[in-house]
Amino acid sequence: MLNLIRPESIVSSIQSAWPKRGAGFQVSWRSISQPWGVFLGAVFLVSVPVFFQAPLVRIWPELSLVFTINWFIISFLLLRNPKTHVWGDLLLGFTWSWLAGSVYWGWLRWEPLWHLPVEAIGVPFAIWYLSRGQGKIGHWFYLGSLFGTAVTDGYFYLMDLIPNWRQLMQVDASLALPIFQNALEKISTPWGGLWAIEFVAILLAVGLAGLQSDRLHWRAFSGAVLSTILVDSLFLVAAMFA
Image 1 (cartoon, one colour):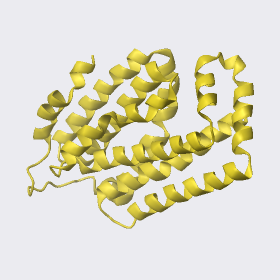
Image 2 (spheres, rainbow, N blue to C red):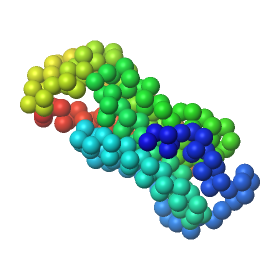
Image 3 (cartoon, rainbow, N blue to C red):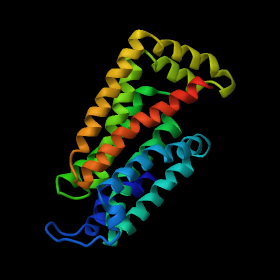
Image 4 (cartoon, rainbow, N blue to C red):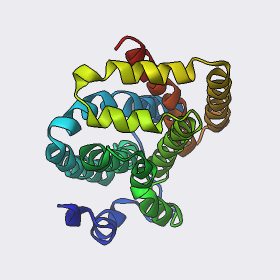
C-alpha cells in the first residue's frame, strides 16, 4: 500500500497540477482564499481531524492509512481546478501529516522515540516542492505542524514524560488513571510551569511572526503552529478530567 505513495509516483502525478512558474490563475473564491481564510483552514486541519483520526487509527489503522490515498486524490482534483487550487495545495500538506499519524499511531505508538522521525516523513516532499517554488501553502502548513509537534515532544522529554507515554500505550484504558495522575504531578511544578510558559512563548513568537505577512503560505504556516497550543491545551484538559 505504501508503494502507492512513493515520492516518485506522487511527484510525477502532481507536478503537472501546478501552473508553470510565472503563469497566473484566477481564484474566484476570493472571500475564502484570502490570507485569513487560509489561516482558519490551517487551524481547522490541525485541530479537528486529530480527534477523528485518534480513535480511528487505534481501532482500524489500515483504514486510516487508506484515507491517506483519499486525501491525496481529493487534493489532486482540487489542484487541477484554478478555482480550488489553494485548497488543494493546503490539503496536500495535510495529507503528509495524516500519513505520518496513521503510520505512527497505528503501528509504532509504543515507542515515543519514533514519533518525530515518523512525523517528518513528508519533509523530503516539502523540500522537493519548495525548492521548485511549488506547493508553498500546503508544505509550509506541513512544516508548521511538524514544528509544533517537535516543540510538544521537546516538552515531554524535558519533563520526563516519555516513560508515562510508553505506559499509556501498553495498558488498558481502565488502568490509565494512575499514569495520567503521575504525569500531571510532573508538570504541576514550578519547573513544569516555567517550561510550559517558555514553550508556549516559542510557539506564539513563531506563529505570530507568520501573521505579519499576507502571503498565503505564511498564513498556513502560522495557523498550523498556533493550533498546536489549542490542541495541546485540549489534550491537557482531557488528561485532567480522565
